[in-house]
Length: 133
Image 1 (cartoon, one colour):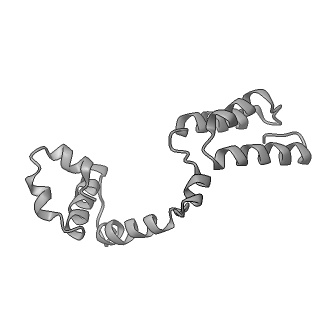
Image 2 (image 1 turned 180 degrees about the vertical axis):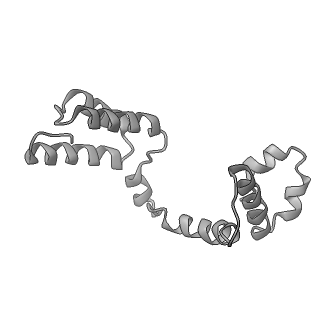
């Protein structure tokens, strides 16, 4: 995809992984745009577009690791499945995004002991966005 042979691929991937692991999307993007002569231009363009679109979501994993924080999303995904999925994936149920988010907000407020605080919020859009987590 991003190289014409195995040696180029290894060099490119080493550089990109090093910088993206540290959240340095600007350096990775500059490198992809100036240093890589791709085997498949469309795939490289798609990768560049993806990184540009999600650059603010690509975090510095090296920093997180150095301060003892986790780098995986497994715990969060499992918690979501247990809190939201268990309630919403019963036989015969189907949910839209708005209803699913509203139910998740209620369940999370209940689990966090914030049920009463949720009902004190007069702006319902604030309640949905706040989630009282």
